[in-house]
Image: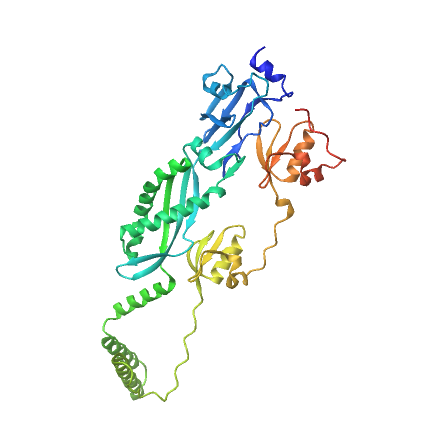
Length: 443
């Protein structure tokens, strides 16, 4: 009796003609094909598409990795023979194994940012805090290492589950790279590309060894100092443009005289110009006394002080669907109103990290509240009887079951320990109607 004749007699195994993964998501990294107690038919096909790799795990040990192409699954095929050599029970038990599909395409536009300010010692500014953000891209280049070191026995693995660890490693390496480069904070804007290339080369070896991942791109979009430091830098620039304060005061007084002489009228205009000159001289004297220190009595001490200038609107650092930069609460509210579904993150000095716009009272007060998502937003990873897969809502899965009631329809979602028959899930069973669900087909 041949190998497959013997396997056919065990547990009434259901044979699979084609093993393939039709990935319709953008964030799935690893998908375990739902074989369970099914056997693989001698002469069946394994289809691996571009941007994928198939990893066979036999009896708990990694057996083979297959790149893009179509393979015949047979004990006579050298490329897959190692997958079947693990049967060591004299064919008294059915074969147990797993097939993992791994996405090897680039995962682009993955955002990173500093959750807390980085403390640096700068030659110009002294000790300064900076923040940075940007995007990075990566791909899985060693599927076997990624399965061993990261995925383990998980049936589904997405970018959300590893991006947090990658971001923390990237930000830590960025802080080391900037600190070791000794580049002044004011000159960092000219080094964004060099910093990205240096960090990518620095981390690639570590990522490949520990995760089987290659960092394909790292972009620094912005490095900024706190708003209060920016204001001090603006004031310093204004003073440098003004030059000597006495000369600046005299220049302003001369301008006042010239403007007064050009107005219609006679001595009154010249009187206004003289008053302007006197006020300019008095201001210069007051500034001189202020530089001498306290103790000098101002000749205008009895006059009432002018009212404070109007307060400017608070500006926030913004990163989201509307771009990046500094904006007021009203401007950010306009971005949100245009694209409610997009990401809108804001940050201000003193905050430990970025916040969603709805958590900022100044912005959320300008917009009506967002209703909670409808219950129908729940989705399942669905495996059809023909081996194809998709991400569907409960109603769509129920339609598939009704269309093929004799087939085996499997679903999985976050929190499940393993795949389930669709008829056993309450959200789907309630949509099927017609009494209790039919028993599953024989295995």
